[in-house]
Amino acid sequence: MTTADPTPEADRAQPRLDLRHGTQRVFAHLLASNAVVSVINYTVWFAITFWVFLETRSVFATGMVAGIFVVATAATGIWFGSLVDNHRKRAVMQGSAVASAVVYAASLALYLLTPPEVFRDVTSWQLWAFIVVLMLGVIAGNPRAIALPTLVTLLVPEDRRDRANGLVGTVTGTSMLVTSVISGVLVASGGMLHVLLLALVVLAASVVHLARVHVPEPEPGTAPAAGGAAAAGATEGGVAQAGADHGGSGAGGVDLRGTWRLVRGVPGLVPLIAFSCFNNFIGGGFMALMDAYGLSLVSVQVWGLLWGGLSALMIVGGLLVARLGLGSRPVRLLLLVNAASWTATMLFPLTSSVVSLTAAMAVFMLLMPFAEAAEQTVLQRVVPYERQGRVFGFAQSVEQSAAPLTAFLMGPLTQFVVVPLMSGDGAGARAIGGWFGTGQARAIALVFVITGLVGLVVTLLALASPQYRRLSASYAAAQAAPAPAGGPAAGPVEVGVGTAAGLPADVVVEVPVGLSADAPTRSRS
Image (tube, rainbow, N blue to C red; front, side, top):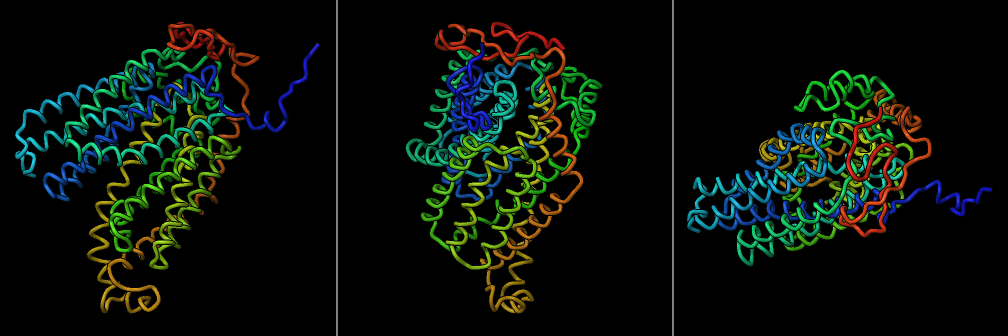
């Protein structure tokens, strides 16, 4: 006799996250751990920027802090991705926190042993040693950001991963919202001393907390026994063969060649990463120009409050993704979100108004979590689990490398080419100055209009491209593929975690058949 399923059809069609039970509860612990550690690492980054400017009054020094972070992030992404693939994910997260704590402790010693007046000299080697060492501690936290989406693949059922990625976006938005506030308060109260003391306390607490969370992982370099996205995604375009040709773990090294072959083996994946890289490339102009444009319209106090309020929309966007999901065509959604963002970018500068600027920024902040979650969901589906760390690291390196190049180029280009065109008797001022306006602020606005137009055209071309159709077909095939031989026929089973996991004794973790909750095992396939 069978019992009718009381779950309404609509609820079955739209599965929701359940962060109170099973592996999804483990994911919630890891997400919370990442949130706290990310906030403290970015607090150190913001604080060193504030503190350096207050000590030296040098814009060059603060610019170098940002440059060190972006360049180091781009340079280490592939290597960090290899660490994630070749070691257990929890061990990578723990090692990352310990490394940051050790570096911050060394920075604290340097800070206490150096006379305060030395830090006021922008040419002091002690100042730059302090900056570089601190930024190394911040960069040491990046493996956590690469490990987290791979843990979404491991711990969250396929039909709920887009919602989990939305929660990751919510955490990012929350971090942005609180980091600058915490940094300012700490620097004002005690310089870098209070910042580093808080960082050491928080990192120690995160290590203790994570030690009590049991993550049921397979051996490094193998896929979960149940198959999931890893195995299902390896059914299209020779992905499985690419992984097999180069070994699941990359022989314990970076294995850039194998990662590149894997990325090329997924139809449309290279164009997707290239598209994100292009977005960052032209988006780098905003890094250089947005503050100058905003401050031409409002006071610095209003500008800071405006950014704080708009950052909250990233939280709203992430929660919307967690609630609504991304639908069955996340690749299409990614491109449509970009089209909307670039349209807003193109239109808001047509009038010199803080209202239009605020509206455009609101659109961008609200839609950003959808774009980030869509890209992560696609990669989690079409890339084998045992190589996801390297692919996420590769994507991070490629995408992050674009923005600083434009940021460094856009400022001089605007100052020495576009501003003269839009000022006085410049050709731009004569042609459109009558209705568009003239001067430095309107020159920056013209750069935004052109940037938005270029971004929109490229996005529409991507929507019409065969590469987009191939990647969509690859995602659909991975979504429809059955579990591979050796996987479970009836889904996961429940295994008691017990007190070893640091969770209540009645909590159970959903573990795919063939994967023990007590000790990770190799994939049966």
